[in-house]
Length: 189
Image (cartoon, rainbow, N blue to C red; front, top):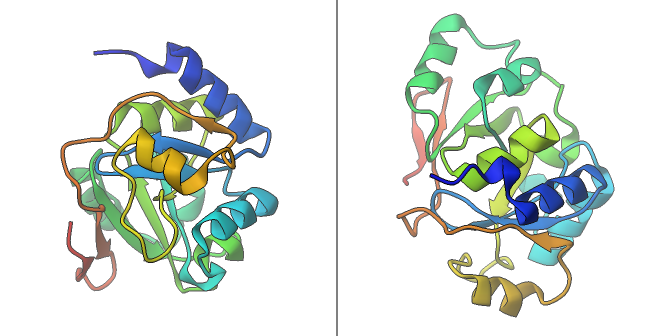
């Protein structure tokens, strides 16, 4: 298996994320758009590219559950163990919003969407930036999520700062979303 933390295009994409850029990268299912969740201008650029309302909130992905520690102060050990059993992989959990994530990520909601990714490129990007990154499907709102580089370029042209290397996972469905408090599946995977 390729170690994507050493891949030139992935390293360049991570550098651009740190500098406030927006990049496209493969995930377990579809291509995603990402940026530094702490950079409101980068998040605003993603929302504009997608024509998405900030109130919907965004998913954060990380290469390791430890990267989410600041966000998990309102969860129990049992809840963390439950999430860990589904990770790494295509399951996103809605966790109680403890106020650590900025409102442009949570959309002002009472929960935050997080996932430890199982995709080697997405994980490498998170590892290289040293924390979670935004992960939202690479498509304008109302259009199908991009499954290929050709579709990324058709949707966004030259409006991205970088496109990381790699292929998407085996599914063409978005990640499953589960609510940690209720246990309900909010979006099937």
